[in-house]
Image (cartoon, rainbow, N blue to C red):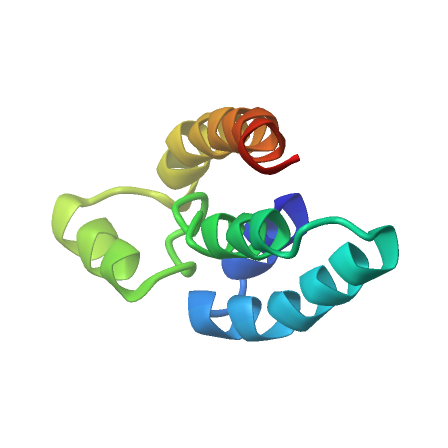
Length: 97
């Protein structure tokens, strides 16, 4: 999930999901674990595109219209992404394993 959260802030969330899903499925199969929590981790990680304004199209629109700076997205988005990463890293294994 953390890798997808990092990747989605550089490329689109669709590209991050396409790259991460086969990797997650392969890891789950090698561990003999259920596939669903791994795919959900990719899904949630690929949608954490709020750390940078280039992560998602709407972020750029908000940045221009609101007069925000790149650093404003990092200041708010990084702690939010960290909280979501920790929360989902606890919740997903509890639900599926």
